[in-house]
Amino acid sequence: MKSKGRVLVIDNNPKLLASVGDFLRVNGYSVLTTDSPQQALKFTQEEIVHLAIIDVRLTDDYDETDLSGLDLAAEIDPVIPKIMLTAYDNPDPIIRSLSPDKRGIALAVDFVLKKLGPYILLGAVEKAFQSKVRLNTEMEITWEKGLSWRVLVDNLKVYRGKDESEKGKAEEELEDLVVRLLDRATALRMLRVIRGRGGCGVVIARPSFGGAMGEDTVIKFGPRETVMTEFANYKRWVEPFAALRCTQLRGEPVRTPRMGAIKYSFVGERAGRLVHFNDYYLQDDVPIESIVETLRYLFEECCELWYKSKRKPGEKERIPLDVWYRKQLLFHERHVKELQDVVEGLVNGEQPLARHFRCQGPGRLEITLDGETISLPDPVQFALEAKSSEKGEDFFPVPSLLAITHGDLNGTNILVDGEGKAWLIDFFKTGCGPALRDLAELESVVKFELLQTDDLLARYALERASLGPRSLKHPIQVESPSRLAELDKAAAAIQQLRALACDIAETDDPREYYIGFLFYALKEMAGFTPRVGEEKHFSVSQYHALLSAAMVCETLEGWHSQ
Image: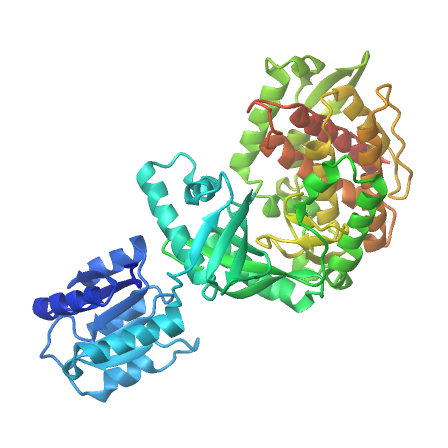
């Protein structure tokens, strides 16, 4: 028989502790028992506990002032429901345990007198599981080929390099999250997993209800704090602005000691299977015009209300753009050193592309391409040191406009349906920020992740065409001997992003857009994920990001000095 759930019992009476534990086990529950408050806390911090049963008096059964059980209940994770036990009829502990605090949360969900016997306690336990825990242990979970709990765990950054014991516990926690998250489904088919960038994973699952197939559901799982931050962001920044065609959060998050999960569904008419924007963009049978229309829909319809919220920064928000981006992209001092090491590795590495780059002196790079040698700023030294607002420089301006933005608009956080309509997921970084940041990030995705050519000269041609104009409206025409069709596709996508940026910013001045793109180029340079089939060494995309960031710095410096 499957366990009905895991119960922790805490009582200082050894006989009662043993009898309650045995009684609950006979009735289908897994049970942990202890007479130690410290051990009880350790259990709740390290093990899955669905319900805690706590004696009101854990120190002295004959001391009416001893309410140590209530103190323990207050210390235990509020996510875990509690039932208080007592041998005495004093109403004060009952009132205290069941009365909501200022947050509207009571210490306990129920209170049981020991003298009423084990079946009254069992009834309280079953009621708590039905109303609070909602553990769907009868749900049948099946998997598409190649998927498993271990595959899901391996998609989480925090478990990379961990031993088998830790991964095994993570698998157990993930299964527990899913059977609580899908509390009404009779069956669940795990379809495909998506590796998230913020330390979380995403699995697309299809629930069934008594034989009737339900809508596909997105389950976001990962470190508990990360998931709860996304939940809070969704409630604050997404839910009030959700349109008919949108990704909507369903129910409340569920948590274990280390992990959390939430579920989303897709509300509104959609056609066909949802695919990542990256996959959609790379499909040979998707015309450029469709990609351009998807980008228009994303910003003008899907995110319409976010951009209608745009406004000038308040007094406390008048922060230079480089500080905004460093905070949002986590470019702290140690990351500056890591980025400097990346530049050194790219320039002095053994890869064939390294021959195009060399250090020219403090803060300068010399780049030779197609017989042409150019001198450009080292973008890390330029953006994070020499021109840094944190160093007292005034090179980077305050953003002209702020808006609600997604905050991590990469190609895996945009899903596209069969009609080319966009749906967003992953709101961990959603909030108020520079109005153009999502558009600038998507340009970096198009250039560094979706461009497939290994020809650095072709990529350089795209940079010259896209970084030369002093207007967001300027046509981007790539002149490259290679005549690659993918360059035209990238140029069209970038042109659309800039047209949208122009509408949002209400100006064609590209400076703030270029600044945002610069910081996303630095991010890609440092943390680029190799394309399928690439080895984990410096890639052409990282060299491209270095070249692009350096060219942006040169352009911005030239404009600033005029």
